[in-house]
Image (cartoon, rainbow, N blue to C red):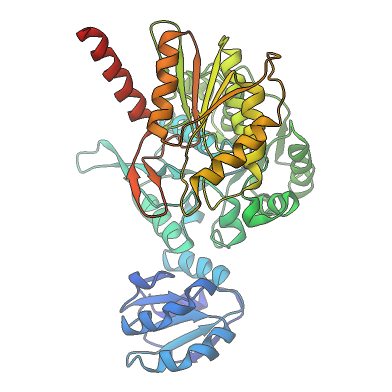
Length: 490
């Protein structure tokens, strides 16, 4: 598309330095590694140091703020193929609008349900994906577990495309490109996880939502948002965006934050906002309380016949890392769950009791270089809800793992009695594989529920100096197979 046509399709303040006429733009990016001929390079605040790289790669046009342009004029002039700089007040917003225009506004041709909230986003989007596919629609899903959609192959049979992006909500150039591919492959319905970070960074500019879903708000990402009020405000941007284009809003209002979201939803969309205070009794393969809330939201957000949507959820496939259950012959069971927030951990441990577990073992840690405030709280919750807590490593990243475990232990020790009126017991085993093996061996000896929380679907463990392949589920299965083989041999 000619840059002049691209610009004319976007309505935002703009100054052009250089010549934009007859300049063909095939893609845009904020990643200098993807810059080059035909690529409009978008210079975010974090990307200023890569302007010279994009210039050397012969990107012909740049999008940036005035102050960055004044600092980078010399680097730009060294590029012999340099043609134009687009000066805008907000690069992230302009980037999203330009990406939408470049791909001919794919979101306008799709029915997109955006799902936001601290917990439940992945489950609700996968439920929507399954409901739509069961109804015979070509559907797609975008989120933490990657991107999937169905298309018809040359023989007319449906096949599933899978792509990993590394983001819950992809950056705007990639997002609009993916939506365009879905549209071109015949997709009509898309379920998208919408993170607070994506909303704060403007990644969703130019994206039209047919439906917004709010699940809940609990402490998380406060290293980024600082306060719960700021965190909530970012989440509410999705509701405002959706209402602004005439879309529907679905809210779980069974919490204080949910009630506040419900009030806003009814102000924004008085004729199309729906608030539910409790879960419907929906038949599910994993019939936990929080899954029933997620299912109730998904049924409403799907727009399908309620009875058909409920029927579809009876055959919902297992969602990776979401209350995945492995049962043992002695009545014990092991749950692998992504629960990495205080609220999620509390709910998962509570469900173990509701499923009849008289002895609960929690195995978890907390991620490094992330919200430190939740570590103490998660330790306290684990102590309250469990009979034994095994504190281990999650993804320590660049932090000292011992410091993270110490902060969790401090929260655990602040809880004098658990819900069974017994003092909390705990072990500290930094090696996650050894921690899991310890818990599994205990479950084989004594009927127990083992909750392995925090990593769920993840396939690696991140340390300061290395990244190792690691799957909680695979490790559990390896340990069970090893112990079974050992018992047979003896």
